[in-house]
View 1 (cartoon, rainbow, N blue to C red):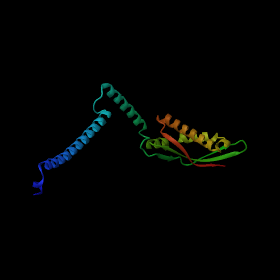
View 2: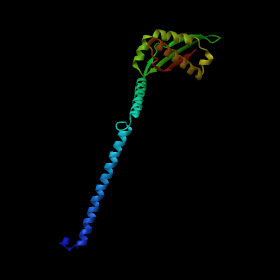
View 3: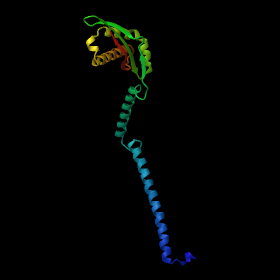
View 4: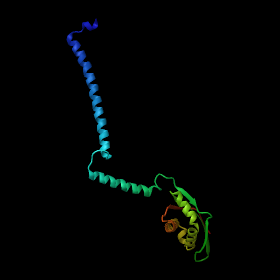
Length: 185
């Protein structure tokens, strides 16, 4: 009976209000749907999956090729865990400081991202140890007693190891040299 008490105008207003709510919901859904489609389309366009000209495809292929080459070069250094290798036994050399004979005991570790480089180091260890001993025997006490001198020695050792590996294997492979023990007497 309550529905019978409503006049025709009130019924039209109630129906119009219900109709407006449904229209609003439909419009919101349509706007969201258009935005989702536009987002997907833009993503596919900028990713180069759709649209573009032959020139853009050529540029994309060129970029892909360059990225592939860079990825191949960095494959051993990106997203890999560093591999450390300790030179055993420690290096022991004597050198003259002008007044007396000094001794240096030096423990060295190298870091690489390629486990195959460790195998190369093991194979060529006699050459590496020989060259490092010769280099260490020509040290100047005043220079290597400073931090800057030790860093310079690290750089020289790294250069020497890389040079040997490049000569013997065709690749450098070693990224860093670390002194894990440094005793002078």
